[in-house]
Length: 276
Image (tube, rainbow, N blue to C red; front, side):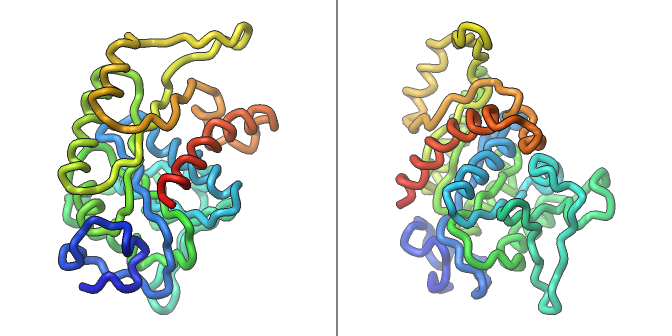
């Protein structure tokens, strides 16, 4: 297979013969970044949404692929759970547009968002590939892939068969999570997929009165994780109401929105620089 027309041409470490997914010629995607952890419950989807908003605020064209097929949460986190995706006569899927951010999620194709998806790995993997080939993303600067938890079949399919340029890791301060995230980082290294760095979510609580940072875990163990993982730490995010309730973003006052956006704004700037 040729690399011609691929959005990651020149940035991807894969051999052309290893890529089995033909890009849609109508799509022009400059950068594809997977948001991964190896562990569930760390806030991958929340970070994906916050990063997408930060990039969009800077004027970039952004899309989100919700690749957590059996547990999609992007529609609710974007406060757009009542939307539906549609297809053209050419069987191309039109993504849902929320505040200029294009989104595709399996929940947009279900009659009821509470209906379970009881599919095996190969079927889920094929759906994820169709989210890349059959969705009319058109021109995007950044396509963020909200990955499923773990390092199983779907994660392997995405990293092996889609032209992912780089991975952003999400962790929390617990030593157990750090160990599992380290495994995910090593998996990416073995697959020759670039790891941009780590965002540590729910890292501390800030006192509303004196603004002291209250840490939850042993700092020495966290420092060891940073040293052993050999990855860049983009940010350590506090536990904030707006981050926890990112689906209610527009209901928070301007001060809260600016505080949260300022945290992710620096992360977005670093990622843009690292991918340029």
